[in-house]
Length: 77
Image (cartoon, rainbow, N blue to C red; front, side, top):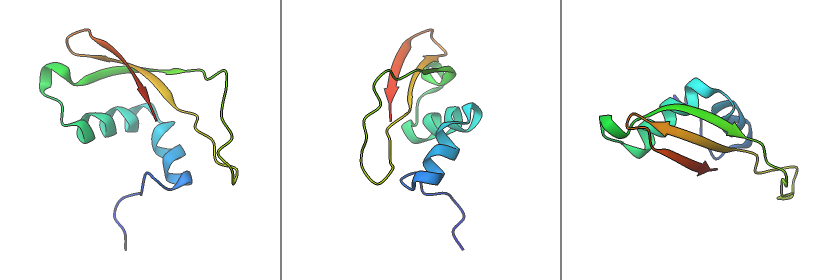
């Protein structure tokens, strides 16, 4: 039995990346950021143009994140 969701699966992707708490944890863990650069907040960015990727798949998640040092970054997924 698989313990973790596969983020490349469309359903898992949406479940993971549309939940702010899960996304913060995922980004901090996957990027292995030092404490001073850990992401502490994020804001979902509305996409004006959402590309159709075929088979009812869409790229829908862009986020603006802020780290412990106050730096702001855009993360596209």
